[in-house]
Amino acid sequence: MAEDWCIPDVDLLQNTGPEWLLHLLNKCEEHVRLPMLMTMWRCWHVRNEITHHKPAPPIEVSKRFLSSYIDTILCLQQHPKADMSKGKMVVSKFQQHQEKLRPARAASTRPPERWHKPPPGWTKLNVDGAYIQADGTGGSGMILRDEHGVVIFASCRFLRTCSSALEAEIEAIREGIALTLEWCTLPFILKSDCSTAIDMIKSSYMNRSPAAMTVGVIKNLLVEGGREHVLMHVSRNQNNVSHVLG
Image 1 (tube, one colour):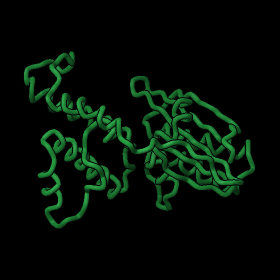
Image 2: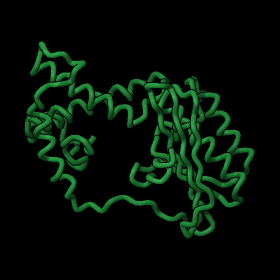
Image 3: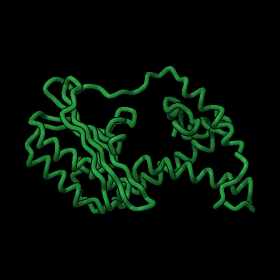
Image 4: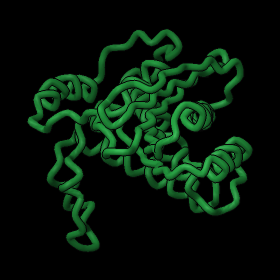
């Protein structure tokens, strides 16, 4: 959410006692408190989904939901009689604050995250999925590179039917692993920017989600392929090529 909103650095989230949250809110300006509380509220919702053995929504889905939700609330607060479907309202003070702060955050000295080569004797597979809710289609992109960064294969696939962003991500993982086992004999590191998909494949618990069948196929591929592998979550910045392919 820090990509779109001004929220405190994660290092400031420290347990200073029972009232740690109140102390943190007291230090924040008014336009920072709202996005921070909304983000925590969404985290609690995702936590409850996992607790009740439901698949957690992808991070990108939560990000879009929160951005849309807070914009709607503020528009209704400022313009209670406005037609929301037309979307022609004055920009809120909250949005103005965020726009002013974004350039300052972009000038951060933190080095950008980049793709890194795999260790010697290994390959790295990056995958990403895309979902278009309007027509129920999707896409997947995948690229496998060796220890020198040389491309072994790059591929993309159109999904004629797709029910969610999570399904697209899992399909991308399945397709990427299948191609990797066909094109290369070396061990591989698979990286996806969907932590939910990675966790579902790693989990030993029974999967009851709509993606259970595909997750089962992926697990069988990994076992039958007999290839040493590592499954990891990665940031979007380190997954750019597969994102473009998808």
